Structures are given as C-alpha cells and as structure tokens.
Image 1 (spheres, one colour):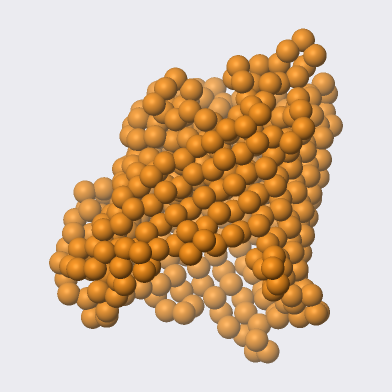
Image 2 (cartoon, rainbow, N blue to C red):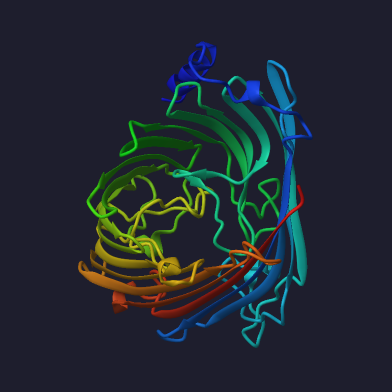
Length: 435
C-alpha cells in the first residue's frame, strides 16, 4: 500500500494540473513567511474518587513558537521552518501528572508521595521543505495531524515527530500524503528517541488519501506501519444534507483496524488482554448531527470488536490518534466495549455573545470485557465553555474551561483504566502574530 501511494504521488506530480499550482503563486521566501507565538497558561486537576489513588494537579505557563518561511520562487521552491516551546511550572506541582509537566526520576514519588517536577524546560526543532507544482515535501521536526499518527495538542505543548511528510494536491479536491518518521517526543518529554527515555519509535510509515466528492460528501483513508509495533488502518466518510430554514443533518462514519506486533509495548491492564502477540481490534463509530442555527445536537454509537480494546499512544503512534466521536477524558475503547453519546453544542453569537461556545455531552459505555467481568460499564458527563475575544488588543485570545465527571464499574477502575475521577481543565491561550 505504501509503494502504491508513493507511485500515485509521483504520477500526480507529473500530470499538468488544470488549475493554478501552489508553487506558481509563490511570492518568496520572506514575502510569504509566517511567525507566531502562543502563550498558554494551563491547569489540569484530576480528583480521584476510587480507592487510595492519588489526585493529580498540574499548573504551568508555556510559549509555543511556530516560524515558517515562504517558498522561494521558481519551478521548485525551498523553505525552512522552526517549531519549539519554552515552559515553566507555577507553584510546587508536587502532584503533577497528566502529561503536563516533565518529571524527574521517571515520575517516582518520595516518602511524602510527592513527585519532582521540572522548574522550567524547552524543546523544539527545525525543518526544511521543498515544493514542486502542488506537491510539498517537509523534513524535520513537525506537529502531525493524521488520524493514524496525530500529535497530542491537548496539554501544555505539542507532541513532536521527526521525519519526512509528502503532501500532494495535484488532483483537484484530492489530497494524498505519505511519510516516514523515526522520532517521537511526547508533550511531557524533554528527551527524544535519541536516548533511552524516548517513546521507542523505530520507523513509522504513513500514507493516506482524502477526497471531496462535492460540497456534501467527503471520504478518507489512512494507514500506518510502525516497525515492531503495529499496523493500523483508518477510514472515514462524511455526508452533509442541507435542510430547510438553514438547518442541516450530517452523518459521519469512522473506524480503525489495528494489529499489534509481538514486540509492541503493552498497555494491557487498561484494555483487557495481556497477550501482546496476536492482539487485534476493530473500533468504529457512526454519528448523526442536526444543526439549526446556533444549536447542534449529535447522537453517536461506537463499538469495539476483536480480542482487545483500541490501544493508542503507547507505541509512539500519536497520543491524539483517536478520530472518533466518543472521545473526551475517557475514549470508551475497552475490550469489546459499546458506547452511545448525546451531545449538545451552542454558539452564543446568535444571542448577542459572539465568541462564546458551550458543549455538553453524556457518554455511556457497556459490555467491557476485563477478564474478571464481561459487562463492566463506564460513563462520563462532559462540559466545556470556551470564550474567544473578537476584537481589541486581546483579539483571538481564548479561555477554555472544561469539566468531566467520570465513573466506572469496580472491575474497570484505576488499576484497569482511569478510575472514578472529577477532572477540571483550564487553558488561557493568547496568540501573538509576529508577521
């Protein structure tokens, strides 16, 4: 599949496009350059409600920099980019965790049950890029947004991958991607795979295609082959049906098929299968969303089959590689688990408060096979309010407040998965554009 995708990319680049190419419209290395910094103040608190499990609480301040040059003019354009971040903790953070702040000694606790969090830290890297026609090749440190290899962006700073990614738009409404990555640095890691504390990524090959049939229908497929870890495939189809009175009904189907190698990392306690070799999982979801002006209501059903649950992130395969609807604090990915969701979203701009958005969702999961039980359950009540400044000196600054109330059966508690938890997340983001 990888060789076929690369062949299609090469052939597509040779075909003369029927529309203006991206490279022909290049203004220059400096003229098209973009640079910004995102100042983020983040706080995550997990109040554990089951057994003797310790609460976790992290608070920090970060500056995330992204500088990307334009492309030089000519048949082939060249450019460079830099991504990086610098952070410091706020307060002692003796109970830090949740992938927010790097921890000394692998997160080991002292006699008082405290962890030793880094006071300050910095990470990042550079990349180079080249573009011919509508095909771009980028090599170096990158933040990925692929369903099978997605960087975590839900903590203080992003997860970085190092490697090569080819993106092609030679055929109208079709995007093709192919790449190879050899390092993975999680959000709370100062090290990379260059040393023993990295995520252990050997070589990950990715490929995929996304096609927009028309304004209503789109579909995509992506694949991942991670050496000595796993093979994963993802499919998605999305159809939007316009209705009267500016309303619409959107149907979305998505799913993953994963097979783990015998040398894959084990996260078995959370998904109900201790036998790494031979682990297989299919997880799929179908959702329907009705939108009427500022109101949206979604119903979703999600199901796991195979001999284990859907396990992601533990094999350097992206800590955000779960493009499925029933994913909040819990992802509802247990062995053979079925789950259903009801979600409501309000855009308050229609009521005179532009920039204010509210989302609430309830997800219920059942039929989880833990070994000790064949019908363990979990449930989550999720709430989020986000306000984005629309004008003034703080334009585009946003405050996001999120609360999850999570409960599970005794057989699916903290030694198996998250455990009963009340979680708060508060993030203040202030973007500043340099050029």
